[in-house]
Length: 100
Image 1: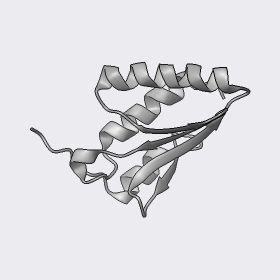
Image 2 (image 1 turned 45 degrees about the vertical axis):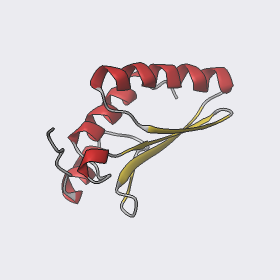
Image 3 (image 1 turned 30 degrees about the horizontal axis):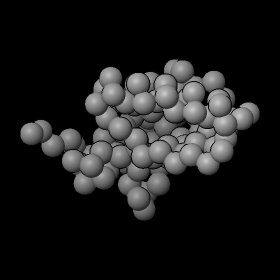
């Protein structure tokens, strides 16, 4: 089993320039973003799309959903719950289909 390598803070900061709305939570060591949709159906549709992308790349976010708000948290468990390139890549993929 290959262990993922955590990214240094400057690399994460560079990546965030291409990820509007995403933040690095240094205390948690994760990338986070909150999406607010027009209604619950949109939120769930978005989550289904996230699920398909996560399965495709075999890297899964932590997801919190309340009504029309979706919070995504990305960090790599086998890297000690730190941000790796896997997290950056998944966030970039999500932004390609994000409609809010």
